[in-house]
Image 1: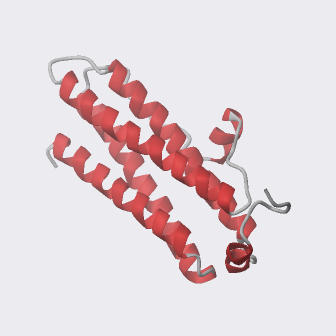
Image 2: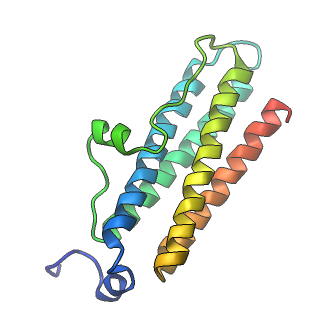
Length: 167
């Protein structure tokens, strides 16, 4: 293993002027994804009532994808020479969306799904902002592709939730 920042030389060249800011923005998205995973997984476990199985399965599937997103973002942060946030207080402090308001009534499917819907729309906005940042500041096709991929999945989640809500 070579010494240095842990980032390949050419990669470092591509992002040299914005590496710190890019890592900061990626860490904010990383925090969002971990928090989304927590809320979706929790909602899937707690949902009650006649349609609970259908809603729980959908929330569980989205939760798995949010966890994958956090892992993909963490990998890219490390590739860029940074470190993913490693403390829950730092995660909630740095997140764009630190809280999802789930209804107390666990059989309120519409309320649960509306909370998730708001979170998905927030995530789409975060990734849109990240893509605009990348467009205007760097030629980093790897991060661009990753953000585009995650944004596409978030858009799919929004569509799935809207289908469940009958929108």
